[in-house]
Length: 335
Image (cartoon, rainbow, N blue to C red; front, side, top):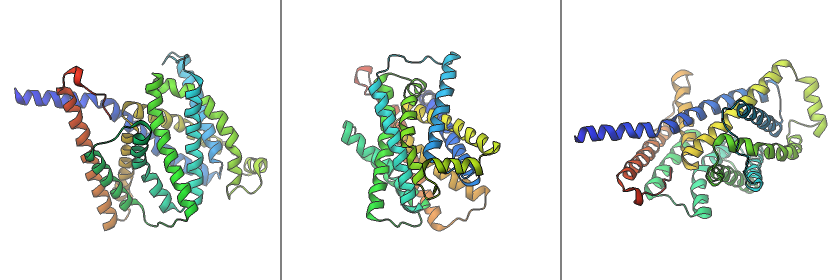
């Protein structure tokens, strides 16, 4: 009986996590795809307008979701108030602009560190803004993971005071965006599709107001209108346009998978999935593309995997413990 009970609990745990695992895989594939396509957009076709590119992503996302809604694949939520959607749109634009400035001001090494620091920043902001803390075990697992990913991926760290401030602003921007995606879905009682469809028009307008930032990039020396005209005359081919549209389609998939994953889990778990993706890319590089394996990289990946396994064990143990409690004693799960 004990064996059957344990097997039943194991099967139930697997079934409970099918959706989050599917969303995580969806997100990893979408992000990997958009990174590969965007490399072509920026390098091969020299489209050095990142905010404009995000604006194209948002437009295609809106068109895709509107089409899905018209086809009856999901029902739009028409009673969502405007102010939370504008707030979430501003949160998204702030995150994107801060990340862009961070990438252009800082070295690759410090930029990578700032991306890693988003994970502890999510924990800090959740506690500061909503009083939602994490257990010592979670803090330990995340710390080990963050240290491991840092050791495996970061080589040079050179930063000025201004660069540090910009980097930390970008870290806070990314963390707050991820947190509010989850909070808004719960607050508005909206699905990922409904919230994306409801807030993307506001994102598009705000991004359009921010496009002059693109002309300040070092690659764009002809001014605001002149830079676009220069690209159109020298680089705008059918292949370039098709690649940009493909990038936009991947943008839709990234946005949808992000909203689905955070809605089903949390901003913290979303970050953990991001670190797993980084470890997977490093491992595949070694196994299939002949990347060198240094002792530093091996130690970092190993340490990070310890953190991932520990974090997963904690979450699964918490799920099992929740099942044994009477319904009246169960607490909403911090995923």
